[in-house]
Length: 146
Image 1 (cartoon, helix red, strand yellow):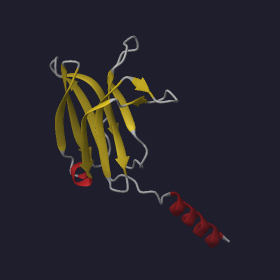
Image 2 (cartoon, one colour; image 1 turned 30 degrees about the vertical axis):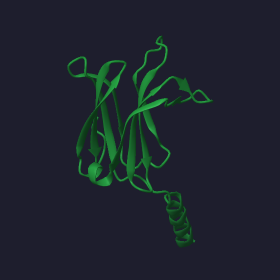
Image 3 (tube, helix red, strand yellow; image 1 turned 135 degrees about the horizontal axis):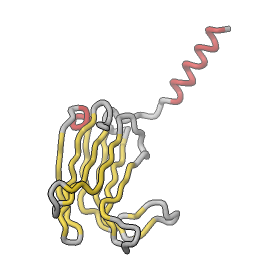
Image 4 (spheres, helix red, strand yellow; image 1 turned 90 degrees about the vertical axis):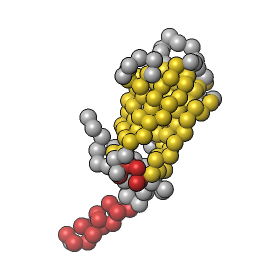
């Protein structure tokens, strides 16, 4: 009785992991270019994310401030093993008021397994309301630095 139960459990575990997972993660930081080394936003996604598990963060947004706001998100595409990173301006939320809808995309980059698994680095700049921001991206082959 033990063998069929173990076999069934193994099949169940295999079935649960049919969805592809990312083989790398990304460490994302945003620096305010108007102030030396002033970090405004940071997020990190460990390897193992699945498609649809988008991570987002606000870069410039205060509770009392009226839109527009500046956001960044990282969307994993586990089928192709790439992340699509966007920095965008938003003035309105989606219908459920859970997520801000992009009104203008300021930058968009795609990072593949070679970048992520190799621990490569990239940086690019965006301007928002006359202020420069630098986005730093680090490939994470194992786990996010804490």
